Structure formats: structure tokens, C-alpha cells
Image 1 (tube, helix red, strand yellow):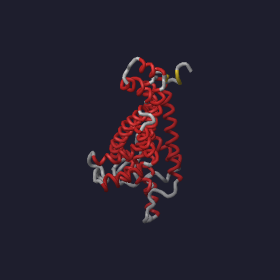
Image 2 (cartoon, rainbow, N blue to C red):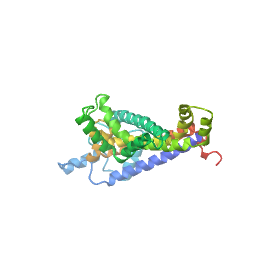
Image 3 (cartoon, rainbow, N blue to C red):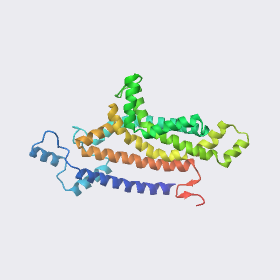
Image 4 (cartoon, helix red, strand yellow):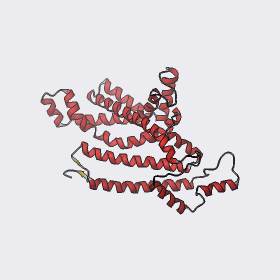
Length: 311
């Protein structure tokens, strides 16, 4: 276990370095600069701003300083948010994005697993068809389209939820549903197909022959093994929901980190773009590591050091 985690940490550091390097140079070759606006600044002021933020230095000097700042967990100052650093924006915005993301993940996992189990137990019946219709709709409709549809029908037409803003629990329901719609559909399909495969195994038939009830067979024997693909999906799911919240946060006027990121793209706020990208990359790599460890714990047949027993 320790050897496996150490090896994965090395891979994570290499991957993170590649992401940091790519982000840094992509930002440097992007057209325009952070101080370009509708009203052109005098050349002297623009030169002073470049000197103040160190943008007049050679690229290798800027790159080295940026790597050093990241090691110190300092993403630098924001070019557009006055008197604020990227760390300040992350500290202010990420808790909001985290709450929204956790709510969306809970909805996606809970409803997706429930639909998948129902569809498998009622295979080729109306419950199965209904669950798969919901899944197809969730996969087909992007989250930002779903957000607009939810706003129009549930807020404007029916008045059940607030249209936007971030004030009470009711304000979180629609954006969480919009974010959860696509992963919910994937989880439902994964659970259904995995459950159907597990229910056809010999040990399930043996359990039925022993007279065990359908509930006991489902909960104790089928669900645990059927959820392994869902556990594998949890790492990309977490990162996908957090990064997918960028547009949804903007639509609902939520003051999360995603909203800051979208605004920084239009403002060419390099440090915010790079800082948020690196921050979410760390979350993604860490979540994948945790999922791998959890996968080995849930299924003891899998050896963390490399493959299945007997291979």
C-alpha cells in the first residue's frame, strides 16, 4: 500500500508539473495582455504595470518564479481584482463551489444508483424503460442547457424555486440539479449494466436457491459488486462536476470559483486562470488517487501494487 501510494504521488507530481508548464506557456502565447481594455492605456503606464508584475522579465525567469510561488502555495496577485490575490479568490469562491459540487454529486450518486438498481431489477419492464429515458435525456442535454430549462419551467413558469442568486437552500436546488443531470444518467446506465451482469452470476442463483429474499440478495450480494464501476467513475465525476460548475455558476449568478474563472478569461487575468487551473488539477489528481485506494478496499481481490490476483 505504501509503495503504491508513493509511486502514485510521483506520477501526480510529474502530471502536475506538465499541467503547470502547459498552462504557463499557453497563457504567454495567448493574444493580448491583461492590461488591454476598451480604453487603451498610455504606453508608459502599461510598461510600468508590466514591470510591477514582473511581465517584463524573460520567460524563463517568470517560469522559475511561478514554480517557486506554487511550491509556497502562492498563486500571485490578480491583475484585474484590485488588492486581491489569486489565493484570496480561491479562499472566497471555492467553498461556494464545493457546497454546490457536493450537493450535485449526492444527487447524481443517490438518484443514479437508485434508477440503475430499479432498471436492473425490473429489466425490460416499464420501470426499466422509464429509467433509461431519464438517462438518455440526461446524457443528451448539456448542463448549461439543462440549467436554462430548469430556470424557465420550475422558476419562471411554476415559481417553485428562485431563478438565480445564492442565498438560501432553495437557491442551490436548480444549479445542483443542472450539474447532476449528466453524471446521474451515466451512473444510472453503469449501475444497470453492472447489476444485470452481477444478477446473472452463479452465486446469485445459489442465494436464490437457498431461499433468500430479493431484498437480501440485492443489498448484500448484488449491489456491492455492481457499484465497483461507479466507484471508478467517482474521480472523474468529482472533477467534472467542479469544473462543469463554471458555466452553471455564471448562469445562476453564484459567487463561486467557477464564476471568477469565467470572468478572468474575458479579462485575460493570467494569474487567476493559471491558479484556478492548477488548483483544480490538484483536486482531480488527488481524487483519482483516493478512488484507486477506495477501489482496492471495496474489492479485496484487486491488489493495489498491480492487477488482480492470479494474473
